[in-house]
Length: 100
Image (cartoon, rainbow, N blue to C red):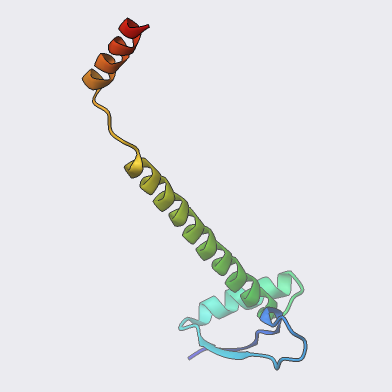
């Protein structure tokens, strides 16, 4: 079993707080090897690679939530608009023209 120990210090805002340590069971030794290889290529610790990935994932989740909120708002706006039948619209337009 491959276990990865992380100090997720990059996610801590206040400098007075203790570091947060997380233990992850990646479940796949090849995944850890790939992460370690990427860290070596980028001359970064494995922790930095994992923290970056988690931050990107959180940003994507927030973006998805924002998009869902926009879609829901648009659907609510569209549902709130009155539906006018074409024949009714044409008749009301004709009445307005004839009254002018």
